[in-house]
Length: 552
Image: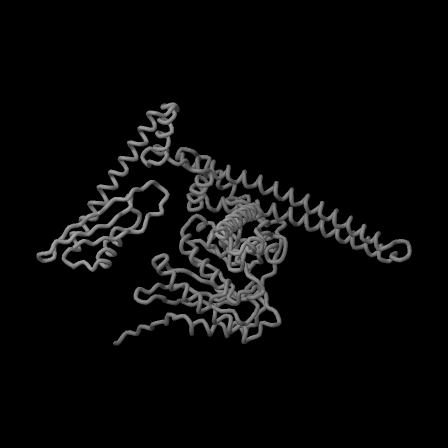
């Protein structure tokens, strides 16, 4: 009996040849031969090929192992022969080529060294990595207080400069307001609308010049502070490595005694409502998580409260200790689809970031510029793929899709991250893009904003972010259409979705305990807050307390 089959040709982009595979076996007194043309080298699973041959030709079970061994041996031998043949052809081509043999040898040796690990040059550590290691050592040493005091002094200097800027801008606005009032009084008599527009344009231009001047001074001051701080940290660490150096303790004492409290800007304390819960999630192996429901302004997690100096130091110490650790803190900030800091919550957030020098990461403006470049590159690659698919003979892609999307913007549900060391309780900020649809009452679990939260939680698992703050209602401010039924429905949806995502997290990170903070707007009523607080334990499995009593 003769059986044959033809396997699908290999589409791989390298030279291959067709070889005839022959397998002989017996069924009782009858001799059978199976033939199958195979492409060598073969791409794909040999086990899958073996299974298809058994099923296609209805081969008896007792030849299964023999067929597998024969197939493995045939493909291995023919693949080696194919590679040897190609190598011999390449060498023969090299011998007959007019090109310089030495050039080929150097190119070959370079490629071998670059692709072989044992010959690779050790990767040189970057300045950022060195500084991170040094800072981590110092912040966990007796020098931590000196570091915090130095950061505090720099912070006060920036605050003074910002106060001077605000005062000068306020005086300019008051002076321009008086001038505009005089112009408006003379409108229609000695001045025309064109004159008014000219004065308004002059006011705007002078205000822009003043703002740019102060922005430049602030940027220069922060750059100087960052350089001085990093140089002092490196020098202090080097001195501490020398046990015979007696100037280290004196230097630390000097920095500890230089803490400045003058001219600190005061901020109003707002009442904070919060409820904490402990839950266990998981089917068999349960993981404990901490949940918090908090009523606050989202930027309260970023601002430094400067009316209690001791509290600032303790809060700053906790954030600094975990800066280069596996217990980072994240915050979800809801933004529009434009990557900038010109308006709305984005501008307020950028203002908070500018209140203190970031000694470890680039300024938020620089990080946003990098994100914008990545988005433009991704858009160009996406349009290129769409265009290529549309040009295929059977392609059904619409070329009009290429121009539909602004290449510099992101879509709802997409997000970008920024890193910070100068915020009060946050290391990483997730800028989640949402649109006006989040204000409607009919969003589902498949809404882009909800799926964006899932992707953010996945990033938290892969990047050691163990505390994450999420806007429970997917808004930062309340509006008229957000009634009590609207809030309850939205909170129930987010609670249930986040619970499902947290159960998925066990398969992502092996069941790490995390803290999830659900944030509601500051303007929400206490009654509404406690209704949401009562809803949370009904959706999550809250751990109950166990009272132990002894029998006498």
